[in-house]
Amino acid sequence: MSNKQKSESGRWLIVLVVVVSVAVVGVIVWSVATRRPSPPQGAQTVEGTTNELPSAPASSETPPSSVPAATPEDPLLSPAAPVGTSVEQSAPDFTLNDLSGKSVSLHQFRGHVVILDFWASWCAPCRSSMPTLEKFAAEYHDKGLVLVGVSLDRSASDATSFLDENDYDSLIALWESVSASQGVARTYGVSAIPHTFVIDADGIIRFVDHPMRLSESVLDKLFQ
Picture (cartoon, rainbow, N blue to C red):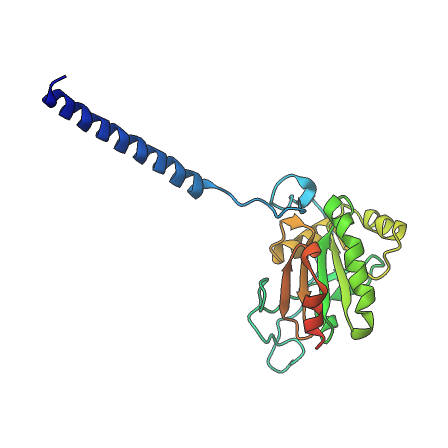
């Protein structure tokens, strides 16, 4: 092979390497750009299918009325931070019935640290994490901690049966209708359960995550 042929062959080899490299980089960039986040490990998507809440069945029930907007004249309801669902934001207020039919609003617990958990009896991770939440409720009860759970069960009886069978009596379980519970879950941006918020005595969110990641150190800081 002549020097000229060798030179041309070398140039073609360089071109081929550059083309292949560009193609590989393109595939990597496309893969990263189109990757979708998955639910956290140990969580179950609502109804165990997709990340979106299922559509509520047709119902003639009237959704619970929202709590009136806070006003400067009402220091209990006036948020100390913008309302939202992230840490350092004021937890959105809501009203639901408990399992006995009594109306309960989140703002009623102002002055208490609140563990707000979204759960359902059909959710295996929820069933696994409930003992931990009950343990925290008992351990910090005398300090004023309140455990509130919004059930995403299909019926009040499903939630009641699960709690009764396991003697979970610390949880203030809320369920008014499928659509009402799902509405609160959407307000809090919940797509996979269990999903837990810890709200301090001033109504500010201090923790958002899977309940099994909640630790005593997080709670201890709120009672200092």
